[in-house]
Picture 1: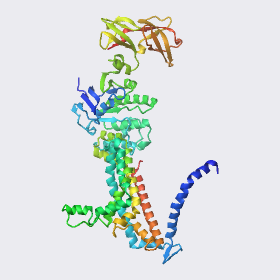
Picture 2: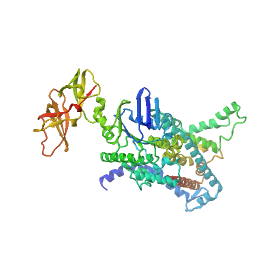
Picture 3: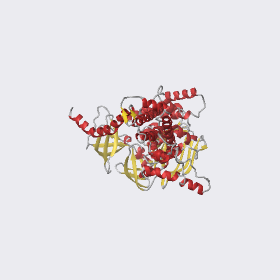
Picture 4: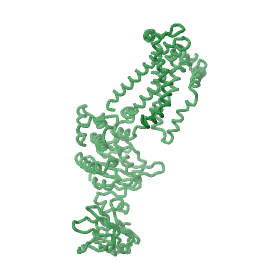
Length: 284
Length: 356
């Protein structure tokens, strides 16, 4: 080992050890656990696919995993659709010297803890919450709305709000990178403002939109706190189920299996999305 | 005379307090290669963009083809632009770029593909249609931008400093190609440039602009030989300036002597202090044995710059404070004068301009 190699190895050693101890080892442990089974109070260490068979056949697992993906999908669609106009406005209509101020303001929700923000949504959406009191007070509704808390809608709403900046920033960056003379060229070649958006702006912003989709979708599938707080029984997601297996249900191997299945599902969907955009992008 | 293709009447443009265009009146004829020439910040690009429709005017009218287009957006005008950055769509192929504006055009997709292929052929990029736009060189991008604008057969092609991003050799080649292309398609070209040489080489007529105003509109030769002001003369090529004093019908030019005012070119006759100027190639240094064909001025060589085919001499004329520059074609067998040598200058009053 020459000196340069040794110096390089010394430099990467701390983060490498950190990553191994806190990421690779736990991940490996989860993978190993997923092939074991729970035998009442002890863990049966005979390797078996029994848990995977159960995860694939038992309707409860499929239902909840499916629901998690649907909820995350809805969160992603809603977040990106709402984030795009914000990013567009900041990139195209805010004075250049004010842009950083706007970005700063967009990140303000992060000044409050994630958990506190979820509790605030409970206060807003609850039976006697801000929205219901306001609507009954105005005489628009007689009975408080119940479909806005303790179900999937509440989870979608809360997560969309929490992840909005993560979607706004990559889209903003993609829009900023668009050479403005391209938009003028499109106008010059006969397109209107609207058709220019669809023929030039949107295709060029696509990498940012894809990034936003992935950044929102991947972590929300595994989100645990929001469904636990505002989801109720019909808003339960896969992470809650995994937590239950490691905790109250005392079946760590099944929890590990569900974790692997959830990770695999997200990976497949994310890769499919990237592959599809590559295919669509064609010339790029 | 027929109606001009483009008529700009009293164009004013303000950016806040800044007066970018100060009452521009300009007629451009159909089929003309017209250049807007001036230093950066003179408003030439702004003027081009008002013709294209990217800038709305604060006052004045833009008439194209006999129709008032002052309020029309760029997509409704019969003009197409070649942008300084070329503005090639990076997400499209070369053919898709060139065909971008044909979406609303009449004809089948085969006909449109044919038009695209013809346009690419015209700019020397035949067979490049399937290339990704981002993989092109600067010169190729320029050609794609040209093809993309020309394929729409506009009445006017606007070129915003199209050659400034190219290296010298490429630029000279493209100058010639642009001239050829313009003759071939017969479309009116309006070129914005800060490069006086480029403007002289390419244009039928040139408008020289300073500070949001047109100083002179003329053909290249007129502009070079008969500049209307000292500023235009300085901007186009090189000119030697000597202090002059006008008294009645006579003028005394430092270093050149006394002569009738009427023997010089005049931009305006004024009494008192003035400036006279002449181009370096209009005067000749006399070598031993040569006889003067015109008037003679005496002086001393202060600087010699040898260029191979040419030599530039700086000569301080007797009675003048600053040296004048004389360019001489080198002749085989004739020695180059040295610094400090006595020089005799043969010059002609007809080539001297008296400025206000």
